[in-house]
Image 1 (cartoon, rainbow, N blue to C red):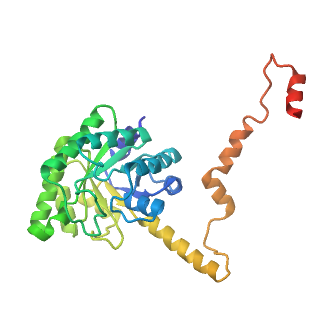
Image 2: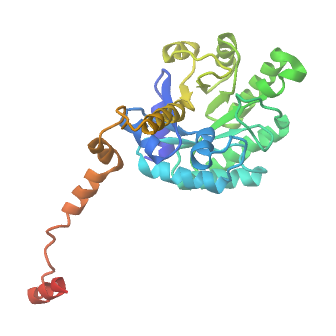
Image 3: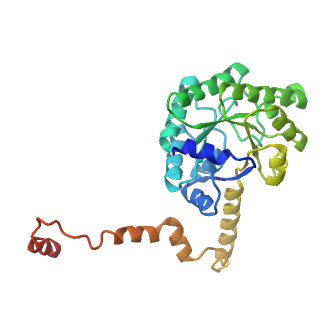
Length: 310
């Protein structure tokens, strides 16, 4: 089963999947070890963890792919990758989708912001025209249909970008129109970033076909609802984009404060657990398979002993 097929299987049953978002191979492995069936490589979190930079389009597609390959290699669960705006025109979008598929991703999220993009909860300024937004998703679907099998997650930021000019109602109308059009083009997962209320979230699920994704960012613009309520409304995925990163930063800051006081932090995993997570036990077990390898039948034992002594 390909990663994309695996992801489609995970998303097939009814209910809302809780999807913690990762930012490196270790955080992705922790998601898998905790029993979650999928994860998402957050662009915000990767930008912060890899370069200590804001999520404003500063990382290149090569940097995102490099991070993604490490993440996909570290886990067996499907990983959706943040593809931002597709990194250019429709030709760039097609190449980005192809590269993400080769890197091992199961899906890719593409959005309609004007490049350089920014985190949807920090004040989106502009989105591209309807025509350009549709071109991006059409190019992604064409790449998928040509063999780069990925689940296409189509995102719109029109709700935030157009509110100041058109008001909240018309901005939401436009965002929903775009998602409907993305679904018609063949996008499988639809994502309206930063709705302002539970009522808006319910309207999205009533009017947008396909599988809907909600973004549960703590202290963000969208209400953080429990997964059971999200399922009742009609969402299939609940993404938690910064939960792991925020908790990791909090834990590291607390540990550093204790070290400044000359104390060893007590709130940590023990060394044996850490060795197991990163794979020392599996590494040693692999080497044990070759420790008593028999010499080839045509090899003289004296030659083996002589080689060993050298």
